[in-house]
Length: 384
Image (cartoon, rainbow, N blue to C red; front, side, top):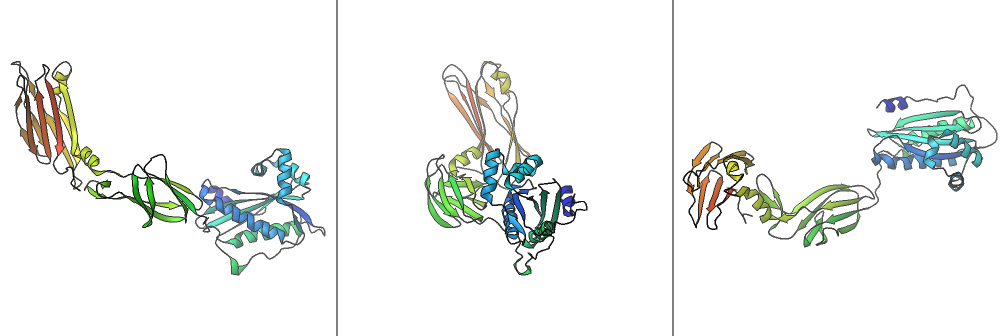
């Protein structure tokens, strides 16, 4: 912002008291570059407009001869220099200017912000190395024309009339309208694809091979895939079902890569339904861990957090494993008992609030195995 304010009040710099060159012969000018002072690349397109307007004005300025671009490119190639580097490398810039036979080197800088553009045209006298700058701020093409008028007045001693009140288009809001490309990656096989509600084709069925939509106009779009009943996305926490759909912004000439988030609904429901499970053999370190409480939580379909605590409370003093599970769900508490039986598998199912406890002790194969699972009762397979 400080840089913007400083440039906004920039006047003719380092021109000292040098008079304008009111010479009778024409002056030769080489235009080097238009540089974006903003780090945001989305305003780079303004540079092409600024450069084009300056070059247009110089070609119609009396007493000014513009070095053609092919000559400039040739000299740069011979000197192994880059055009963009001439803005900061004054020594190389003067060298190139002399090789071109140019009297002046001209470059531009711009900063687009808040619907306006600050344009600064810089000029360097190849013979003396003296530099100057002309700055204008505004939203339209005439901002550049006014700066170009000041430049030509300095070069030739006469101020031309480049400003056109009838054709002052806003250059900041002009956008690249070249069509873009959308590449959709999807795991689905032959799912229908709709762009802005219109059918455009089928998914490839290979995650690494996208379906490509060419010639898409810049702007806001939406894309949707559908594979019929049982596939799509699940909206949480209320658990509703819909096709995968995504809105996106496409810039001119951009290639937008999108990934289809469609899943099998039952697999999503399974992960939601069975929110805690564990299994262990009643031996070794597991004996001590079995006595530790299981504390978990989930968000129900209304958006409320449900806190759950399960204490197994194991006992094995008589040589037989006995579990006395205590389950707490929110403000409710329930207690049960399950004792192992030699050569059998015993099971317990109990429901408290939105939680179902499934617990088993298997003593059929010489080792006591415990399995437990906590399940939500407000979610079930096939509920869509």
